[in-house]
Length: 232
Length: 290
Image (cartoon, rainbow over all chains, first blue to last red; front, side, top):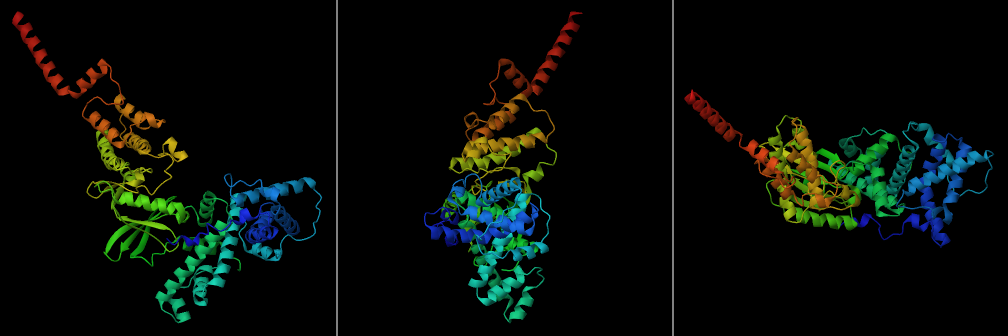
């Protein structure tokens, strides 16, 4: 059974966040930050209508807070996904900030990220969203897919990735298999096979990222549904 | 990685969901139905050159205990040889770990579509009995459907009734699920509950008022407590047959008056002939006395 895509024996990043071992905890934190910093920043900007400086500050704060074990002790995977938990404590943090009124700038970044990238992306995105939760989910899917696509670039052979990039990753895909075959001087069958292999790898990586950031099978199943859509 | 547009994200979601059958003998033609428990495609078996229906289970069912359980279920279902059960031809696992089932492609209408056309109570009951039969057959072999609903019953081109989607569904469908299914419990009585709901829906389409004994059958089939229901689809079908034949049903304890009324309903023609004879005799006697 090719179930090797599912690293069930690998310790969940969510579990590792509560580890006694500081290095393991920080490594886990980096993994979480890689997936969540952009959704959180954009969420603060769009849903809570914060300016970029405030949103940066809040994102750094939530990341620092997520490192604390007493924060994570409140997380129960039976009640909600880690994604929802993170959004909820972020909402709470923002509400408390509102109460304080005066904004106190904190020194020291929790993680080295370039907020200007997120700001540029926001300028290109459609701000319409049904609910805060839906907006956060969509940003999470976008970032997770972006991370998976970046890992595909590192792990796939150049031809497979070039075909995958042109056919699936381009902002507007209107290229045909025949055009790709001519462009790369291969047969259409090769294009078909390479694209299928690239999609398979993409799916594997995306699932692995979800598996890492969930704490139970049930949460994993729900998050996979949220990632690929209910009709998968 | 550079930013992904909404279109790209949607394309990737589709691409990730699209099953890759390149390493199998099957080829996907089009999607037939989508649901929480996966997507059913029409496909072609390249080796045997025949059309088939292929159900691809959701990606979260790949690997682990779920895959083992599904394989065990598939083995059970493959052993169900009955004209009312859509046969399972094959099963396998795609490269991404998703399980798929290959079944006979049934052409016809679903029960959900058929229910729209006009019908009498008797027609509804006969149809329901034919749905109960394959379910009863499966129950006798230890297999439970657990997701019976009009969309899972096909009426073939020649009127054959076929029950689809055996066992691979574990969740059930709201509206057809027995109360105990919500806590994961399943057994013949959960199927009986769903059959009762289906029967009620078919009967509602007849537009006729239901006799008390038939209402009792419905109540027993859809009882909240599993212990109050028919213990198998066979017993439900038997009671429906008894009702059609004008016999007493187990769901309704009769009084003497009920029994007389039922006997009367069943023997209307005889009562009519005897009554006519008696009236005629009385007229003859009266005329003779004058």
